[in-house]
Length: 297
Image: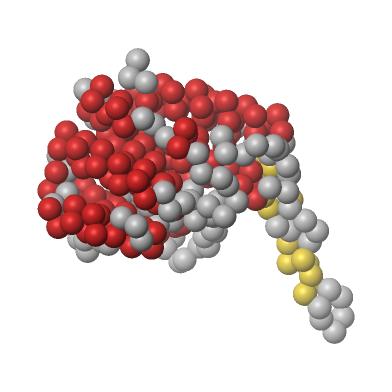
């Protein structure tokens, strides 16, 4: 999965954290005693790849058993030919990776194969044609009716793409592809939720993505000197404004640890709170941004 180079090794822990969060769940971090490391080392980590493409194996793992598949939510493959500049090609490469992952997660073999083919054709436009070999095409044809094998193929392709980009220090490309993949993932999930409910784990998952989205914005912000990145940040602004309305609140009563004397208070759980108005606004903003990123206007 990783090229163990100086910069990649420095990014492994942060990369793993956000890979778990990206459209699949959340986690927390603790102080690991690195506070005394030189500022230069900290800056090096911040400048490496700490936001990744969503893994096809994990992208919809959280929601696949709680949603219905809808091909109408996919970005039509016919649009691929209309993306002519670098920004649109990279963004929508990420969109199509997410679409392929969505179809694979739900066992929609024909759709997954179609989007794999689209990704293969688009790869030559962004310098990733070496990923898609005849051996890969043979694997797809051989295992197209096997859901588990298709997921493995999709996952292997993801890792090959990531490895190629890391090897060539194409961090701005990773940022752009990640932006497209994240927006498409959230577009599919929010538009698969038919009715708001505070108890719906998918809705809380959308709220929890606030932290992942913030990290994506930070990563994009480190590459605004590259063509199209500043424009992408501007495109994402409506989602950022919607997420700013979501606040961190106590999720439940304080936990206590019994003792021979008084109970010891450990603390309260926290969560990002989202109500129906916030969710509807976020859903609308994600749909708005997704249209901007995929309509080539």
